[in-house]
Length: 112
Image (cartoon, rainbow, N blue to C red; front, top):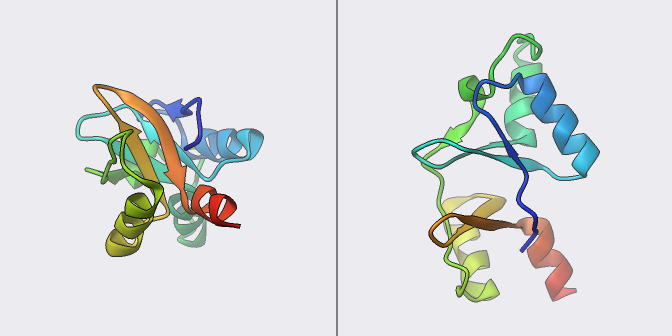
């Protein structure tokens, strides 16, 4: 799992989210909302491909809500199986609060 967890407010611009992902060399940010949400590089690419102005577009307009999460004690193989089952590339790890994020890149790096 990757730590520390990178977050962004829901009212930040999509452009700011893209910059943060680039600068941190990650492909998703947790959005601190209820229900739990993330914005991924795929969400940003979809907005750009649709011709939307990412400087005016808010994270809340494109984020994925009610995301699947994993407990810290979950085995990597179980996390990978969840990612396959739900067709996702990012799995926030949550105890009482966010702990970190498991990505498909993390799984691949661990298995190689």
